[in-house]
Amino acid sequence: MLGSKEPVIPPASEEREKAPPPAAAAPNGNSSATPSPDASLATLVERMRAEVKRSNPNLAAVLNGSCHVDSWQDGILTLVIYADFHKKKVEGADARREFEAAAATMLGSPVSIRCIMGARPARQIGSKLVQHAVESHGAKIVSEE
Image (cartoon, rainbow, N blue to C red; front, side, top):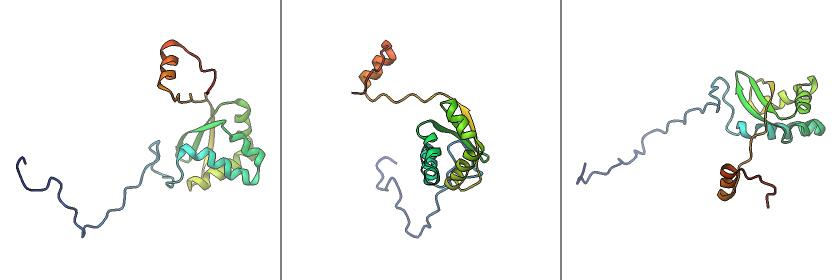
């Protein structure tokens, strides 16, 4: 209230028990299998690659910048793969088993991998001037320097 001497925000009581933070749902809304905090979907492919690399470095190379996670729902991890060669390699029986085992380790529950073809996401343009030139004037980036 205007002119009041009362504090705007009441002081926190030290006797009040801290409630545990609510469990976070996965980014795609899947609450049946909530991944651990370190199992974010954005880095899952890189962590799967590192896990597979321990036992099979050649197979791990297939995931090196060739795909990203689209969704994780009902035990199915959907990967968007950019090249048909990589998709066929990941879908192979032995490779699929290794990738699913690595993903299951990361996510803490059984995983089945589904592969779909898709385009590589566009890279973020750092400079506002360059971004304006690309978007407004049809400029093409020929070098990062």
